[in-house]
Image (cartoon, rainbow, N blue to C red):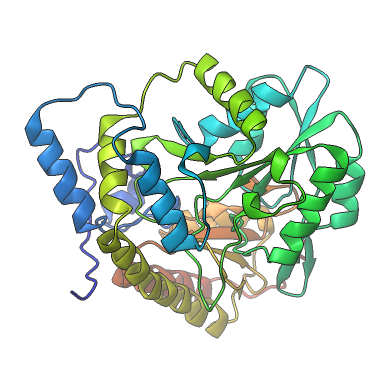
Length: 398
C-alpha cells in the first residue's frame, strides 16, 4: 500500500505543540514548523493496535515480558543492522528521563556533563534542574559540515570531574549522522578515560541519502561505558507516550543504570506505550517507517529550494533527523530580530537557534514533519515577507 500522509487534527487534544504555537499563526490555520513531530498520522498498525487495546478495557501494570525484549531485538536487527541480546534492554520513562537517570548515576556536586552544541537543549536543562554543571565542546563548522572537535573532547574527557558525555546520534539540530570513524574515536576516548557515554539515538531510523546510523554501543573500545537510548518518539512520532528503552551491553553498567532508574520512581511500562511498540516493531511498522523517508526528504527540498532560491538562507544538509538547520545569511535583519520577523511578519513558527547554543542568533531549526502543502505555503510567506523588507546588509553570522 502506498504511503499516504493523513493530516492530524490536534484540536482539543491538549497538544503541547498546538498550545505553544503563537495565536496569530493558529488563528490563520497555519501549522507550526517548530518542534519535531509529524503533522500526519502515525502508522496504521499502531493506531489499530491501540484502538483494540483500549477497547479491551484492561490497563494493568506492564513489564518487559511476553516477547517485549525480543521485539526490540528484532527491530534493532532489521531496522539498524545491530544484533543485540534482549537482556541488554532496559525500559525507561523516556529519553530525557534516561539522560537524567545517567546524570544522577554519574555526577556528584563537583562533577559535570559534556555536551557538544549546537545540540538539543534538554540535556543541559536536565542537569541544570538538578543543580549540576554542563561543560561544552562546541562542534566545528567547516563550510556546511559540522564535525566533532576531538582534541577539545579529549581535553574535557581527560578531566576526571567530567564523568558523562551525551552524544546526539544523529545530531539534533544540525542533521549530521556521525560516521563509524567519528564514533570510534569517541569510544576509544571513553575507554581511555572511563567516561560514561550516553548516545541519544531517538532519530536513528530517520536517515537519508545512503547514510546509516552506527549504534554507538556496538563499538567495542568503549562498550563497557556505553548506553544507547532509543524509542518510538521520532520515527513513529509517538513523543507523548513518554517511554523509551536503554540498551546497555555491559552487565555491570546495566545493573547500575537499572538500579538508578528504579530509584527514580520507575514502576512499570506504560501499557499503551508497550502496545504501540509491539505493533510498531514489526515488518508492517518497518515498511511504513521507511516509506516516510521520501516524504520527509521532499520537505527538505521544498525548504532548500525556497530559501536558497531567494538567497535568504543557507540550508544545511540533513543526513539524519527530520529537522532542518538553516542560517539566515541573506535576511537583511539583525540576528536578534529574525525570530520575531518570522513569527509576526511571515506567520511561521520555527525553533530559534539560541535554544541550541551560544552565538546562534542567525540560525533556526525547521521541522520537516509537516504536510507538504503547509511547508510550501510557509516558505512562500517567508519569501514574500522578506521581499517587503528594506534591503540592508545582514550582520555577520557567528
